[in-house]
Structures are given as structure tokens and as C-alpha cells.
Length: 361
Image 1 (tube, helix red, strand yellow):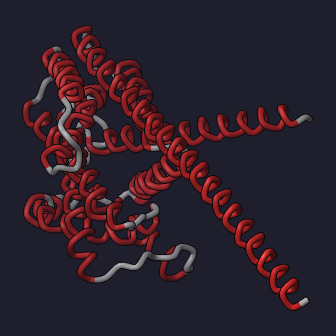
Image 2 (cartoon, helix red, strand yellow):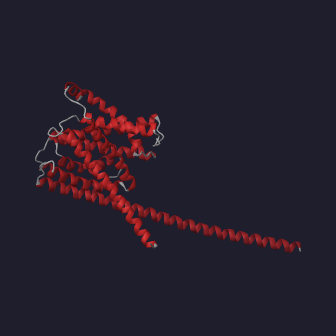
Image 3 (spheres, one colour):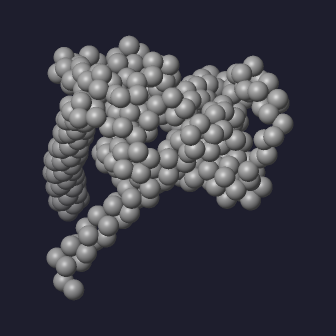
């Protein structure tokens, strides 16, 4: 194949790999959401203990991460002092535990489809918290976009057939905690040059998250589980569920690391539509026309938000290329000037040598 054919083949390979990463992430995210709903829903597996389920996930992920890092030494840890752990990892772990606890609790009260519609508020929460913490500047155009997403979600909530106030509060709380966690990761870790892959992230964060979850678990779920003497731990159900949750963490890193966070956002929209369709057709959740209209409005707002982010990334990339080009031109000019100076110096030295020879002669 010629050079053009090789370039075309390389581009095609990159596209195929990107779609593969997206497909893996969508499949695993889809599986974890549906599996959690199956376990927690009173009409299905009927094990309504979201804190316990989240603790099982964190215990499993902590154990696997410990084995890979400390026992088999397949993954290297980052340099993490005690002070840095307490100031950076602990707050992130606390928010992560609250986010998982609240989001899993919402599955008891709300349908999968409606939960996905509420999750469309994530860009709104992230942007609002970024502005409050001065991580991002306020822009009226962006805020208008955020308002349109919020209106769409409000319409979807208005049309929800099985609206549950407590479930909505739990899911909105989960969105708020997760958005705060994402912003703090940028402030507390990324800004300090600390980059955690999924294994090291679980190695540091999962035990911390597990510790925080013990507090509400002892007060809320432990007494109930203690009285439920008929309960027998199903190793297959909870083992495969935890394995899916662990694999999802790896898939997130694979998707973002090999493509971009923006690709994950776009893939998330596709996943949401698939979950809504699955919830309506298989689980038989009620999805009303008002639901779809509201989520459609929110979807357009999220799509525009992703488009704006893409244009911003392109502009920054072009600006970087222009800056590099300008730097290269300046470097070339300096080299030319230095060459002229060197040539003049050599010529002057040669003239001086000839003059000395003439004087000696």
C-alpha cells in the first residue's frame, strides 16, 4: 500500500478502536445500572440495602486494587504523603461515598428511565459548582444553556407517571455530590500534577469510601440486616455485580485515556437513550410523551454543551499550534541571526590574522 493508503488505514484503525472503547464503556455502564436496579428494586431481587451494596463494591475494588499494587506489584503507586492524602483524597472519598449511596438509593424509588433523565443535570451541577469555587468563569451564554437543560429536566419530571419526591431528592443529591467530586479532583489532584489511573484511584479512594459508608450503615442498615435472619449472602449475584462495577472503573479510564472526556460525555447521551428504551420495553417502566419531550429539550441542551466544549478544545488546539509555529519561526530567525554574527566574527578573525601576517612579513 502507498503512503496515502497507510494513513487511511491508520485513521480507520483509530476510529475502530475509539468505537470499541465506547462500546465497552456503554455495555458495562448499562450492565451496572440495570444490575443495581435488579438487586435493589423491591419487585425484583428485593434487597433494598443501597449502603450495603455500595460497601460490597468498595470492599471488592479495594481488595483487587491492593492485590495488584502491593502483592503482585503490577501497578505502581504515585507519591502520596499523609498530608496530601488527608487534604486531597479523603474529601474526594467522602463525596464519592455519598454520591454512590444516594444514587443507588434512588433505584428503590424511581424508574431507570427517569433516573437517566435526572442525570442530564450533571453539566449544570458541574458548571455551577465550578463557578462557585472559581474554577471556571461565569458566562451568560453557558448559563443560558444550563437553564435550558434544567427546564427540559423539569418538564420530564412533570410528566413522570410514578414521581417520588424522596427518590428525586436522593438522585439530585447524588448529582450534586458527584459534580462536586469531579470539580475537586481538578482542584486537589490534577492542579498538583497528580494523575491516578483506575487501579491507584481505587487503591487510595475505595478504602476511604468504605470507611465513610460504615457510619450510616451501622446506624441505618445493620440493625435491619441483623434481624433478617433468613438472608443468605448470594456470592454469585454480588460477586458478578461487584466485578461489573470494578470493570466499569477500568473502562472509564480506558475510554478517557484513549479518547477524551468529551467522547465519554457524548457516549453517555447514547447510553441514556438506550437505557430509556430498555426501561420502557423490557422492565416495562412507564415513559410518557411529556417525559420524552422534556428529556428531548434537555438532550438538545447537553448536545449543544458538548458541541461548545468541542469547539473550545479545537480553538485551544489551533492556538497551541499557532504558538508553536510562531516559536519555531522565532527560533529559526534567532539561529539565522546567530549564524550571521558567527560568520561576521569568523570574517573579522580571518582579516585580523591576515593583517598580522602582513605586518610580520
